Amino acid sequence: MTRTTAQEEFSAYGASHWAVLVVFAAGVAALVLSGRRHRHHPTVRRRFTRGFALLLLGLHVSAQLYTVATRHWHSFDAVPLHLSDLAGFVAAYALWSHRRWAFALTYYWGLTLSAQALVSPVLDSPDFPHHEFLAFWALHLLVVWAAVYLTWGLGIRPGWRHYAVAVGLTAAWACAAFVFNCVTGTNFGFLNGRPATGSVLDLLGPWPWYLLPEAALILAAWALLTWPWTRRPRRTGTDRVRTSGSTDR
Image 1 (cartoon, rainbow, N blue to C red):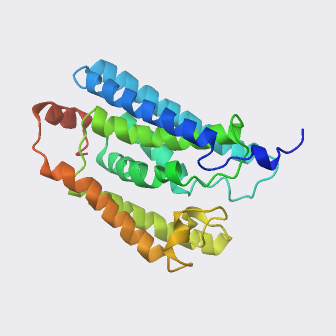
Image 2 (image 1 turned 45 degrees about the vertical axis):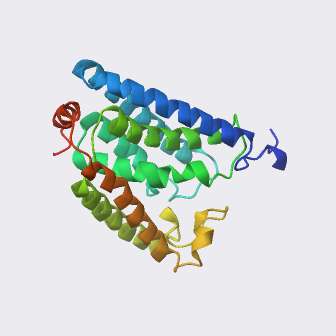
């Protein structure tokens, strides 16, 4: 089978990209409505969230196995150090357990870093319906959907402690990934260089200087994502969900 032609390569804001955005919006609406119906039905909520978690986990494990099984791959490609890789595993655990640290990372990573793929996808692959196209969007959309479902569906609310947890764990990841990149010559998290394809990082200057405004933008965006929830009065239904969700663990 020959390689697809340039005309068949994925192009940002082409027809397939717009179709993905429509699917994303429909999924958000469906999950918010479903989550609100599940709030007062613990058995249904548990079954749905755990099924969602298993689906997300299964897709990420399959993606890692595919990476290992393909003929042309670097030995370090199988290491899940990209945040898009880690976000899937963390989101699956957040859906399953509702633990604070997992929810915090799912909320902040999902609604900023994973959601960035919606507006500036770093995807160098054939267009729909190629399996690489489908895998890329499935893995990113499901993480964002998980964050939406837990927050606006089930009513689990982030606070400043969630913010602190997310910042601390993300900083630890960045340090570990940067050292790993230096030792192995990889570029997880694009911490050691910009991606080959165009991205929003192109607007922030050359390496390593773009890391500073990138970090500042992330911290500010996460603060903005936290502040509205700390200003809103707690509703009785929400309080019950927070207790049953065990986000304080």
